[in-house]
Image 1 (tube, one colour):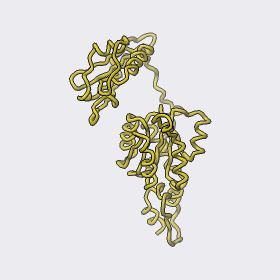
Image 2 (image 1 turned 90 degrees about the horizontal axis):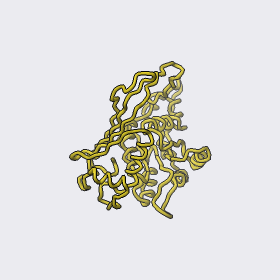
Image 3 (image 1 turned 180 degrees about the vertical axis):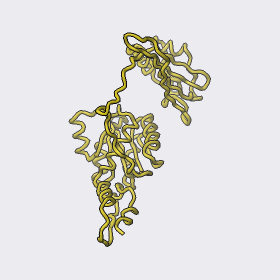
Image 4 (image 1 turned 120 degrees about the vertical axis):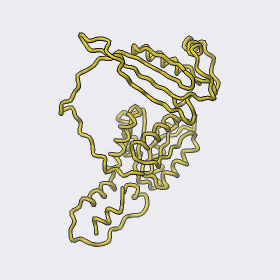
Amino acid sequence: AFKHGHTDHPDVKLAIQNMGNVQEQPKQMVMLSFRVTNMANPQRPALTQEYISNVLAGKGQQGRPTSAISDQIGLQHTYLAAEAHGMTISFAQTGPIVQLELQVQAEVLPTRDSAEHQRPSRDLSAFPPNRKICCIDDSRTARRLLHHNLVTWAQTNDVKVFGQEVSEVDLFVSEVLAGAHIAILDQHLAYGGDNNVLGTDIARRLVAQGYSGLICIRSANMATEDQEQYAEAGAHCWFGKDMIMKDMVKALKAAYLDTPAASFLRDALLEPRTSRRGTFTIPQGPALNYLPNVVHVEEVMD
C-alpha cells in the first residue's frame, strides 16, 4: 500500500473487525475481517479484476516502473499465504480507493486477567520530548513507518530518515554527529554489490568519532551471535524487524533512560537537598545527548 499507493497522501488504514459468531459449540468461533485501504496513485493504471486474474494465473506481463504492480510475485505470494491460512481474500480498486480484505475464522479464548499474567510496565514518563532521532534504512516503507511511529510515540518532531541510496550513509553519520540523541540503524543496507553497508560498520564509525548518544540496531537476524556482534560494534540495544513499531519505541525509550548519563542525571535529581553548595559543571559535547533537561540540575543544586 505504501509502495504502490499515492506518493504524497497514501492514507493507509488497517481495520480489524469481528463479523460475528459462526459457531457456538463446542468452541466459540467468530469471523474476523482484516481490511487494508489506501489511496491509489493517480499516475498508475487502475487495478482491474482481469489484471489480477492474469497475474495469479501467471499470464501477466512484467510490469513497467509505472505499472500498478511492479513485481507480480508479491501479489501471488499474498494469495498463496491467504490460502495457506484458510483465509478468503479480495483485492480491488473502487474509484481512488484500493482495498485488500482477508477474512478468517478464529477461536475465541478466555481472557487471561490473573495478576500473575500481567507484566508490569516500565514507567517511561521521564523520557524527555523533542529528542533528535536519526534513522537509516534502505526500505522506503520502513523509513515511513519509523518516522510516523517515532513522531507519534516518542513525542518528537525532530526525526530525520536516510537510506534511499548509498550516498546517504555519510549524510546520516554527519547528521548524527551534529547532535542527534538517538541513532537507529538498519543492519543490512542493500544497495547492490560493493555498495552494501552493515549497520554495525556505521555504529563503529560513530563510536570512533566520539558519538555518545544511543545507538540502536534493527535487524531480521537476532541469534545470540548476531546480538554479540551488535554489542561489540557499540550498539546499546537491538530490535527484531518483526517487533511491533509501538513496542520498539517503548523499548527504545527504556534503553535511552538506562544510558549512563541519563542515570547520572536521574540520581542528581533525586539526591536529597543538603547544605552542599557549589558550582555544577555540565560537560560539553556529545555527552549532552543523554541529558533530558539540564535546568532541573541547577534547581536541585541551588
